[in-house]
Length: 329
Length: 136
Image 1 (cartoon, chains in turn orange, cyan):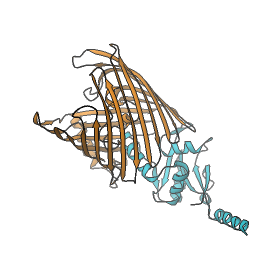
Image 2: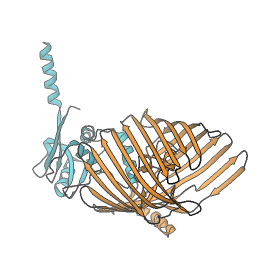
Image 3: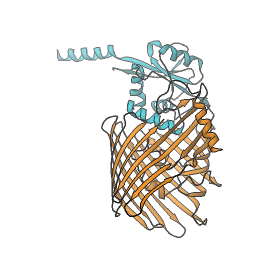
């Protein structure tokens, strides 16, 4: 079925409009249907390991009218991974399975309320809403985005938005069912109940999130977790300061803590510098680390990103250099 | 003499200042700059149960540049970044038209359409929601 949808996404590009701008998608004829996608390749160099990877290859379609709209996104993840390790030798892995990353329908109830149903990016914090390489600041993502909350939710999202001098948005997130393509998530989640609050005024945005979820582990036993996340962003035309801090707790008193502070400076439209300081403690995995990341991004066009970053870790043998090319189309 | 010079400069600035208006075919009350920004960034899509249809002039148009400076208060590079991110989110930028005449005709005929033009081009078929003056 997924291959059929993918084929249809390709097929309709034949009928797409002639005028095309990279990063803005194709319109299918005169219909309110748009096609797009993105891909990402990267190279990572550690002390004892080199890795070459074709990571994301994704196709998406969206559209609708003034009341109802949809989004479908299908993706190959870690399509090709070649690793050269001094200790363990060379390996090549291929994953040609197509995953459903997003599949939802939005319904505009009235001026302030809307309802989303399906599989969607959990509207938690900043990074999780813009998780693809070409759009985020660095090739790597903060550890916080992987160990605090479920990246995706399959269920309902009732959203309230109010605009005045400031913008206020509240999301009520509800999942009480098996997830769509549950392999494609950081947690295998059956239940997810959460509240997301966002306040934006001028260049400043504050977000506060709290929730509860139950996940299955590898042995299919179910565990319950609670989490809280505080995020702040200040952005002008030239720079952005972003900070997120979160905690997760479980009934057996294991806790996860993670946070990062990131500064981004646009030297010009094409040249961008990034510095990020991260820290995390994962009690369940008995893991912790402090990370300093220095990055540089070159964007010949906005939807094309060539990125480099160097990561200095407090953990042994984790210092690394990463280079990537990513494109939104 | 100095005072005269100051008056002359102020008078000159006033002569060269251009006045613009944001117009719609429906009378939307309590429209603020913040709401107009939200409408043209497609964050605010419905108001008083009417589906809003923002209309832009071409990207290199002087009136659009004045609008983006006054209302959106975002640079071109930041807007490019914003609309690329919105493409991933499944949202499209406002429709674009080449001339003020096209914009006014569209605004007159489409319920909820909102656009911006030089104030001398505003006619009786549209309502003024917001006015501003620019020396650029």
